[in-house]
Image (cartoon, one colour):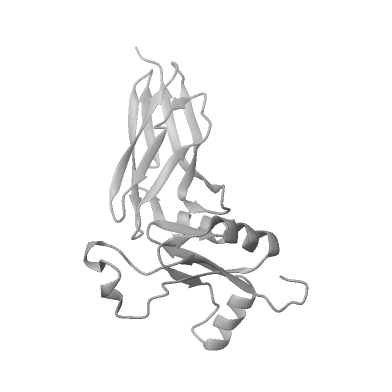
Length: 201
């Protein structure tokens, strides 16, 4: 906060405008991050809601549905921002949001030799999640990028690198590119799968 303690939060998103400088200030000064539409007339005159546009929102993580609990959450910096297909907030809030949004429907797969296996991942949320690979694994190759479409199940292809044998629990290293924890950093995430390898005959 500022030295006097008067400033408690900053507007990181206004309408369709995201301000990375204000985002950095909010993180550095530990201020509550806020978003608003700044609309002064009916929302349908400014946003094409029929085609998926929506006003930016401040998500408040309150302990209960009361004005007092909301106030407490705001002063404690327990907020995140939802703007178009972007989530902005602290890692401690965005990580559980990501984890609760995806379901690995085939957590156990098998790969023979340098063959491949398809992992089914379902996105239960209402926004697409843009994944970008971070690093690599010695056992398998994975897609460099993948979009988990809202409300859909997508296939992630794993391909064996060598003739391994046995079962391994892997954490696929990605970042959720539209989950911003700082103005320059997206949320690191891991997708857990168990792979049974067998050498190709």
